[in-house]
Image: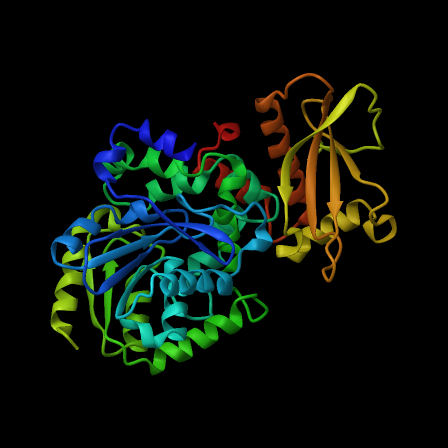
Length: 306
Length: 131
């Protein structure tokens, strides 16, 4: 049904010509694309997007001689969408990635992370170091304190996903895909014409949108948060990591602002290349896809065969 | 929020219960769970009886509280519109009723949560009931 809806969007196939592939991880059906050949690059999206976010990043990377794998997180895109909130946990999503990478037997992986693709992708990387070649981070976080002052505010963030309010606003009304992404890109008119309908089409019904309000509830706000220990572990592991790393950030990002977040990643990974600033708010791939691809490709070229 | 009222069990002959909203994690912010426990005397009533409210459209709603082993009660909540058995829902009316119920809930939960913040959030995301 979702694919039928997507096929009826005039601009969809021209933007997303990639073959759909599926694998079962932890009992869930995960959709991914797998294009090109060479050392693999894993492109990870967050809330409420899917692999489509990387539609302008994939072709230049493939043309530059890379294998690009783009999974849809369980609960998003063309992957299975569990109907119960208890199906989701940070550890579970990290394990889902591990399941994908091991089934495809990927090695020398470059893990590219955005939003919740950060805690999950970096969590995967830190627990599967033997399979990982490098890291790239964009508009995300990897530490236990509230990621941004924005996330501590009642208006609009905590109110949006409060009990019953979350299922109403994000479930019945799909406000994150319908309005939230739009507000978090720079070229809103282009986004409205090219992408808005696609992001809405993959979340067609209330229950398919569950992860859009479940993920915000996993952001740690204090020491009692469910993911507190995992984020503490993640930050400690990253601080010891010597993996080559790349930091890319949107100049106009107001939520994960570069002055706070890119800077903190640079402190955590002082050897990292960047931060490289590109045009973009939180969903910077919408505004700077080819430039992000070039930055990743150039960064990997500097690593050579190492 | 005088336009939502807690009521006794309404007559249900010729009606059906139509599920309109579910919450798996009522205690995500514990003050929300406490509001329902307080309003419907759930420490005493437990699972024996749902709660009932009447919304602005005049429709009554059942609040079915859900328990989960190992978690404080209630852990979840299901909201059902009590409607004519064989008639389809009026989605617009249900949507407006739910918004009123959410406003009533936020008002009851109290500070620092405010109805003004809820309504501002609704306007920011341009949901139909705020237009």
